[in-house]
Length: 64
Image (cartoon, rainbow, N blue to C red; front, side, top):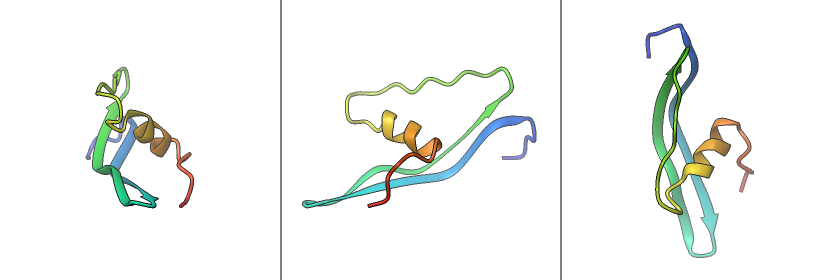
């Protein structure tokens, strides 16, 4: 991650939820860069972690 022109830079985003059945690894070690003029789309099946990823980037995931 060398480009200083990045608008957003994420390194090793990891989000785990603790449930009664154990730990759910929703997002693990995700890294990305978004530069000026670039667009990002998150695509995946239901339950793939799209919303959790977006909430994690915005630091809106509640603590367990």
